Amino acid sequence: MNWLIKSYKKIILILIGIILVYLAIYIDVVLRAKAAYYNAEKYLDWHYHPEKKEKYLQEEFEREKKKLDKLFSKGKLSQEEYNIQLELLEFNKQRQLQESSLKYAYIWYKTAVELFSPPQSKWVKLAKQKMPIVKELWKKEIESKGYKVEDYMLE
Image (cartoon, rainbow, N blue to C red; front, side):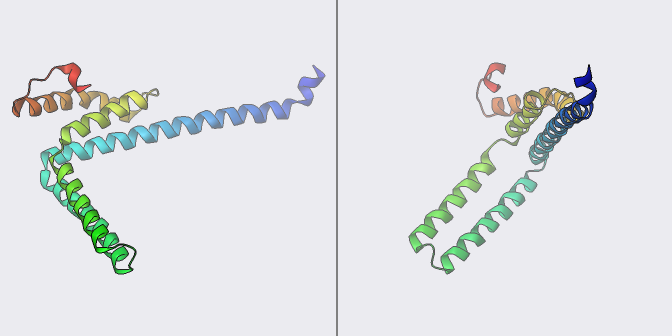
């Protein structure tokens, strides 16, 4: 009992430390769920407004091209390397334009639900509500291209 009284401050500090660690984990998981949810929302918005997706990807292409131009002007890239890198940038932009925004929206909602719960934060609950709707839209999008799709194929 004497040991318990002498160690009272240490026990309190350890308990506070444990509580702070759990609080930090909780905050981190909730913030990650929020980020995943907002990524899903971005892709869903791109589905409804493809011009936003195109604008974003073009701006990203221009940023990366400026970096390449800078490296080329400093002599850190040869003409051949520059051309190859530029071709890769264009290829990636075109590939991303062709990718389904609904697929990525679904994946990000699913990420929020599966990886960042518990706790059942606001973001996880919202993702759970939207996930089946987006999955169905994605399925219809694939079927409209002439492919037969079963639900297990979208998991």
